[in-house]
Length: 352
Ligand SMILES: Cc1ncc(COP(=O)(O)O)c(C=O)c1O
Image 1: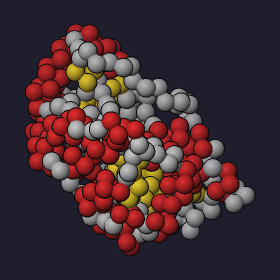
Image 2: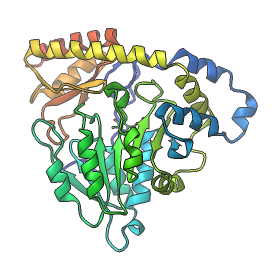
Image 3: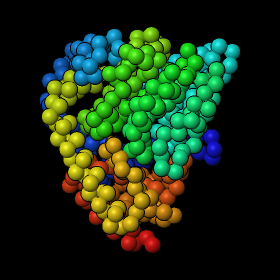
């Protein structure tokens, strides 16, 4: 794994500061979600949860029919489900199934590929993080079963052009899927979902953890043609989405104004981060997500530590391919961004 860690190390469980390290909505969820949770009855908690109303609501939001949506316990579960469905040894038909991961990428792709028993094929980044299309096409073999494409990408915030997804989807073997991770699609304002009818071998992954502020509730979705979703459905535990998540999702989808307000703040916050970076002469990558990757150089670990002592959590991403010397900072609620930037600047001055 090119010197990378072999398992996911959860960031420390830090709640006593400003969390700008996991791309969450630091304002939390819509108040309507809390109202819906408070209305849950003893019986509802006593029975196995019904999914159909929540699936219908999600399908309406995504603009597809309900049979094209599978709710999951966070997109993490959808990714693990896809890996087990498409990368377990028996999915290879005699060869070890391969997953292509264009780097830098959400680390979970690497770990879940290993857990499922697949072979990881990493494609290293270009210096500007533009999608390495030729290299990805060159990595496709008869054993390819998943190509992961994240748009906008984490940790860079750079979007992958839809043409890239179309080209890759046309080139993978018949048994393979292209898994398009759209965890941050709301911030980019675009999704590959409308193209799914033309590309039935593409599965789109979505989460309600980020724009909707429901990370702790654990609710996400996989969207695609039933033929490619079914293998994922079979491996996901039957009742992995609980009644609180079902109720929360329906309430959250009923308050899109709340999400839109957060999206407006994210835009304003990113402009503040860019302006600060320009002033401090730091390299950054314009982001289509709710975070910005910033290169602070060899002192990155010390800067992240110094910010932590001031109660602001940032994520050191320097161990990721192409991200040497970089930290990632969430850019969401404007007040939080202002505080985060003040502390970052202080930390940069303290650590020279
Ligand atoms: C690219 C990407 N995919 C998936 C996830 C996981 O989302 P969830 O909280 O729904 O499991 C994340 C969370 O950080 C992410 O960044």
